[in-house]
Image 1 (tube, rainbow, N blue to C red):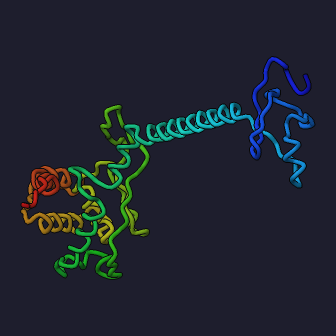
Image 2 (cartoon, rainbow, N blue to C red):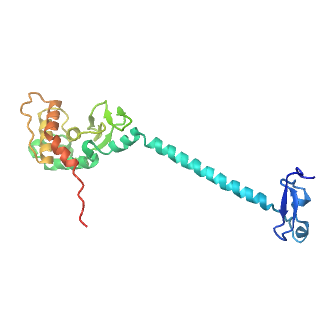
Amino acid sequence: MVGGDPMTQTRWKCPTCGHGLLAPTRPRLNDVRRYCLPCSSKSTVLVERVAPALEAQRAKRNVAQRERERKARQQERDRKHRANNTPRKVAQRKWSTVGEYDMNIERETSRLWKLFAKMPPTMLQASTAIGKSKRLDPPKVAVKQKNWNVDREGRTWSSGALGYAYTSQHRIAVSPKVSWVTLAHEIVHCAGYHYHDRAFYNALKWLTETRFKTSIDYSKVTRYGYAIDRMIEQQTDDIVRAEFKKPIELKPD
């Protein structure tokens, strides 16, 4: 039989008159059974018959294909979600904006910078940035992306320096989970106190006492340096934790 295997046939129907006949499932283009000749003679174009069974199979295949594409898209979304939610990525997103005890780094930097406007004039004389150029915008703070260590449970620690102030660029780079004292230390640098001398630590002491309404004592220190930072951190740890770990207050109905 012309056009295909005589054992594989289906019924083809004219969409205009409904007349049908048996023909191969894949007839040739010049197979007369492919067209309804009576309806074609009444029209300006050939009227092609359709096979309802083949159309149903094609629709079924299209539905299956769309389902496969949907599953492939879902698998791709799941893959990206897993890639973006590894312990390291989750830790990076969290600790890029908050510090120790969930301290909001940007908000706290802005708050500390505004306190310098209340600093006594005698202390401002030792500062170059605030005392002379009078910069009002707080320094930009970024969490360093290098030297991050994250385990499978998302615990994070850093093996690099805790912080560094780029005073000429008016910006600060800190390690993840930065403590309040480290952030304040670098902010004092950006305020113009470039050296770890008496003026620097007097400014850090004043900033801490003004921020938390407390008293700092490092009179036993005989040499200025990071030991004072550690003493301030020990004396203010409970205060800082209470400040940034405040319980959420539920509003009454």
